[in-house]
Length: 283
Image 1: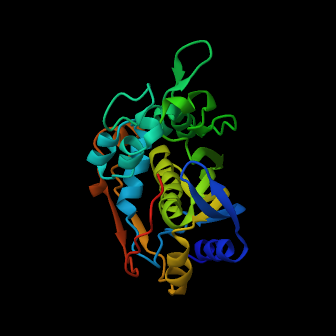
Image 2 (image 1 turned 30 degrees about the vertical axis):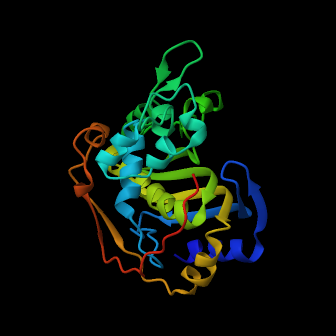
């Protein structure tokens, strides 16, 4: 929590106002933030200065792992995070590549599990990484990325956290995740959970020990209609101790994550939190 609160305070104190064309709002912005999550010691980075809906965050990244491209699929799994981008984004609604209600297009995991090859076909980036890590192979050239500039026009949203690079030292697995843009009051609450979870679950299904997860944010910002709530409410609250994330030990393969796993396979223990804060969301 300290590094999260330190970043929030840094934006409030040192941020510069930037106009955001997509949302039509100003953002109080800082450049470059680095957060570290100690997965090895089970220090789950769940926000405690307001209620955090951690299940929705985990459901979303499981949807990425499965290559989902439809908001209805995400809802069935347990999160509504893609509803607005799929159905309320004026530019996407007018896009000829949109297939209809709930369609998100070529986004996130859909890209990473089907990355186009210049000579035709596609590459399943995650499958390659899991196979190599399971064999103890640390291939520094393998990166699970959602970023494909040539396909931005085919999806409802460019990826924010777009790159996950796993590294193996001995039998300990590490993760470096890079995020180009972060809505700190809303998005970072989710993204911290997802980076931690991704390392924890990848270590489990590849038979490795989790180490640290390193989270790089390039552009960290607070929207103008979120500032008062962050400065005058959330930053005035005292954080509680970190809770613990419990993962079903029966999840042993990528195929398990792709097929039978549900949110019932995860739990959080000892989660103390302040009451929820309804931050505005910008589509």
